[in-house]
Length: 126
Image (cartoon, rainbow, N blue to C red):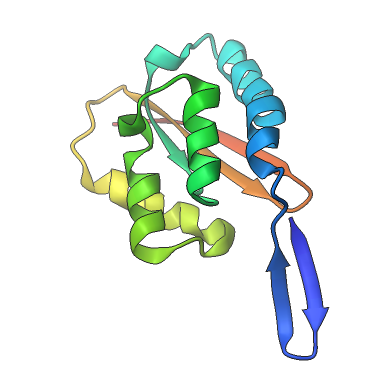
């Protein structure tokens, strides 16, 4: 992930290897994060993920060994708005906030960034 500076402005560059990085680096990052908090995938109600593209979301679903339901709003926002860079995560979070999520449920908010950075945040719904 990076930027190309041209006479017409900035153009984002996405590597075709992002899904494979999700299955290796990101998967390990999420597993270590869950372990640190004493949680497993079944303990997580939803994954509030930056929808970097359909192939990226499919790789996340595979890496997490989870259902599409736990990523449903990421797919929905991608379909309706596309990938608007990392700010897209706020649109996904807004959609989950409209749902009736049981108190004390956990979600993981996840965004991917340039140079393949990965940010994770554990949320507890109240």
